[in-house]
Image (cartoon, rainbow, N blue to C red; front, side, top):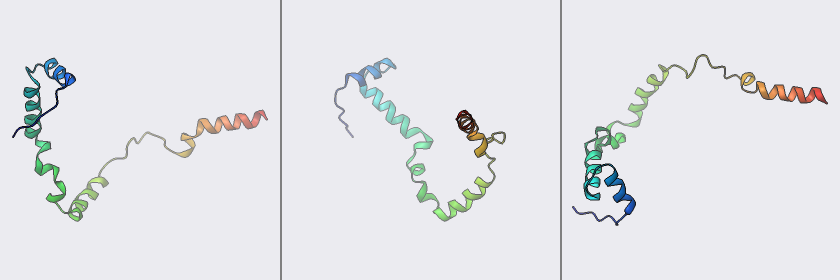
Length: 96
């Protein structure tokens, strides 16, 4: 297979700055790296073909139920979120 990439000073500069003798070597390295990565295989990119949605959901929902909430020490009540704003409004109302 042959691929033509337009000449690019930026691409050439990038390739040589990280130690490749040519853009061709750099691109070959990128492609080989991508093909060799376990997370980038064609099979992993087609997760929807590996397990039907209904089965996935049956596995996913119990998993989500085991997760702890974000930060148990965080006070995310309306009063805490808007406390500063309410204090400003109260000061404004008191001054009039």
